[in-house]
Image 1 (cartoon, rainbow, N blue to C red):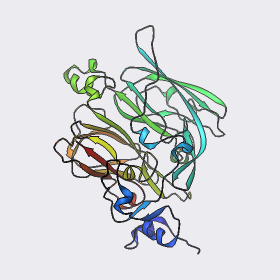
Image 2 (image 1 turned 90 degrees about the vertical axis):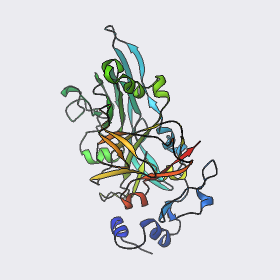
Image 3 (image 1 turned 135 degrees about the vertical axis):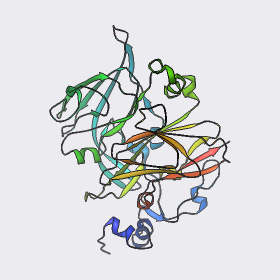
Image 4 (image 1 turned 180 degrees about the vertical axis):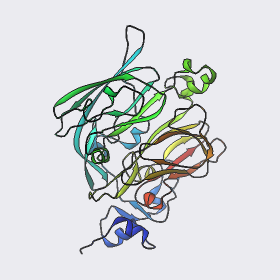
Length: 362
């Protein structure tokens, strides 16, 4: 049966969501109607509530992909650490281009461009004031760059004409880490839209140096990886992304950390008595905004993560345009254990994969 349709017309034009409709029309589709609770149980045996629409059927092969979206939640790359003669900390990283196929949904393979073989790329985590040195290798067939959101000189900007790595070339980026916050890096080669959408982006987190913020030292220490204050927190990286699988400038799948419905099928385990911090970044192409909504709770939000005082207090939904990011902080300390959903509040996004859950345990 030949079918011709646009993804948005399916969702916007009727009662059925795209997953339900495709599941009826296309046997073996990656979408199916909501499975039974027996199909959506957590490791602790609790069933996962889902919106009455669709979920992807089956699982992707993380081993074949070479990365796991669950591991990306907490996989911080801190670099090789040494001291410069002036006493400043030097952190050195190696980042390499890999042009490879990635299974983004069960049976759906996408021709991605990646940093270090994963989407999103490695999460680079440093401390305010560190000297950062990145050796960037491009064994691919297209020119690529590393453009960091932060403060640096024009020579380090990673746009065409400034440290663009052509095929078989290596370049070195070097700058001091500032300001503290939740940032990102991505390719800025032309055409920019295609280089970013194909997977060339990653998180760049700069922790505050408590000595530089004596009036808010305790808060700064809670953000600084490796401190006792930071160890109290349950920290997660969530990169909101999407994929246009037929290259018509409309996304067919939405996700956090690349794999649709991953954290709905396997909710993120949360210890009730420990606070939660989420580093949230939006890199979605072809849609003007993305959003994050938390069920049954509220959070404080630090826009771009560049302040130690919340820029929004006691909210349960936040919007981000592309490249916008921030830090969410909340607690389930007074909640009963159970499954608490979080997702985009654009209904088509959650139907197409951006739907997740926390499993809160005592």
